[in-house]
Length: 124
Image 1 (cartoon, helix red, strand yellow):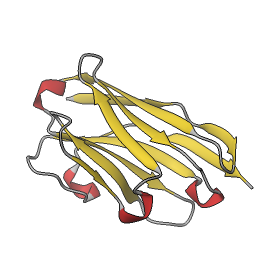
Image 2 (image 1 turned 120 degrees about the vertical axis):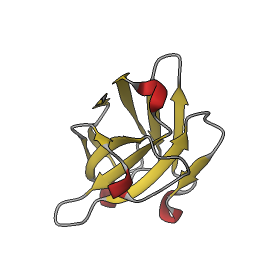
Image 3 (image 1 turned 180 degrees about the horizontal axis):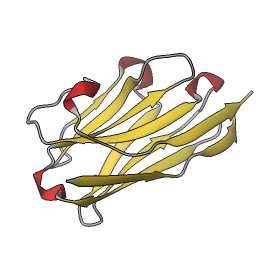
Image 4 (image 1 turned 90 degrees about the vertical axis):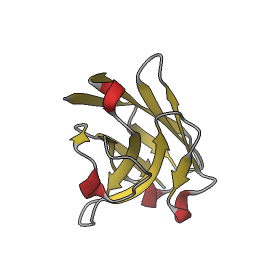
């Protein structure tokens, strides 16, 4: 089992930056990729970014390239999502997820472990 706890969400203004953290515990040695997803009210959960265990491979949703940066600190079992130039349409609950399946995969169904989510609200 893997437990994930997100933090760092909040209310910010358009143009601001925010860094989300996801602390993992449990059998983190068996996880392959960790990812961030987000879900806005009335919308489906969408992929944001993922990072492989080694941290050498990063993937982003096309619309978020250049705006978001994912990173990880394996010594701290923590994954980060640095968000910049935030826009009101970035408002959503952001979820951290982990999968033990090999290969980068952006499908939510592949991820077995999820955090409780952290709310990010961007005001105009």
